[in-house]
Image 1 (cartoon, rainbow, N blue to C red):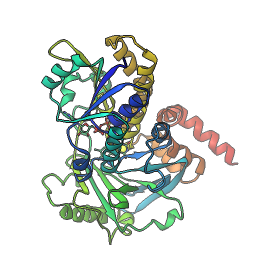
Image 2 (image 1 turned 45 degrees about the horizontal axis):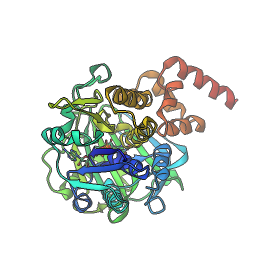
Image 3 (image 1 turned 30 degrees about the vertical axis):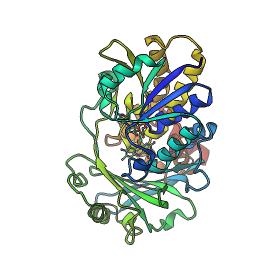
Length: 414
Ligand SMILES: Cc1cc2nc3c(=O)[nH]c(=O)nc-3n(C[C@H](O)[C@H](O)[C@H](O)COP(=O)(O)OP(=O)(O)OC[C@H]3O[C@@H](n4cnc5c(N)ncnc54)[C@H](O)[C@@H]3O)c2cc1C
């Protein structure tokens, strides 16, 4: 008799894990608050840029349905606004392998339909704690993959890994058609990371949405600063207009190519904010049962570094390995702690790096970002850190290691 697993939440992590377990012969039930059609016709949820290591987990499960269709990006562009608002610094690093962004409306609805076609069971229901109380005893293991939804209340905040109690950025996203290329990038397709000190960041990236290829404009505004002004804007066309006005003022080099953009669809905008948080992985139900948190439920970082979907993919892959390796043994609390521990062995790095990127850059980071415009090797290393942020801890995150690295690059150049 194969083991029965309940997964609550049909996002990047829940669906990826559900497919992986189904493929290995487990009886998987997936509960989703929305149908595939509702997700497809709804509002955008993310900018979901994913890098090679995370995309590989999707390929491994035969879930890379849109790989040929979705635009690639092969580098990370970095632009810094000077005190007078002009472009003070600009460079681009090359990725060793391409990255992609597939609108989660496309991906999650497609993956959910494929999961049912492959024999998985989907129940459409917004799950409450009392539902879990009733349902969990019927399964060998219950996993909560409900993102930042209300079920996170089951999982206590871990203050030792959660330095922020409040949101650190106000988020504003719009998906557009008609964006022109940045001429200085030539043929290199990039995610552009535009930093406006004290104000926030604008990310611009190509993606695949419900209506085909598009670009995403994504502001991360310092709270109560000039980009924190999207609360209460209801109409998507008003949202786009305001984004373009702010781009003209703060990132005119990006505005230049965005003059003629239009919304991809009426669900193309998103705004909001949340506090980054790490939670304890085991949730206790009133009945005494326990459930295991996955991905954003347990580690929700600010999207400034574009790591959340990547972490969700990596977390789902680690949990899959752990469940397969566990055989017929009971999924007790020790198993759950150990499984999360394996994810945290990795996730502590993107988490610490992301939390650091929310602060003004320290002097050694400013030096690195400046030196990257002179040395392509530095720009390339920075870009590839997005694929595996552990590397940042060997040169970028520590002033002494940064100095050693910069010296070695300078020596190699003479
Ligand atoms: C503006 C923005 C930009 C981002 N950009 C990037 C980026 O460029 N790159 C990147 O890697 N990450 C990015 N992220 C983060 C990324 O989107 C998330 O980290 C990732 O989607 C988390 O996956 P998940 O499976 O944990 O949760 P989710 O993808 O959020 O999935 C959770 C699912 O659970 C469902 N659910 C919730 N509650 C219930 C319930 N009670 N019952 C049933 N279902 C429920 C939800 O409807 C949802 O479908 C961004 C996030 C935001 C907000």
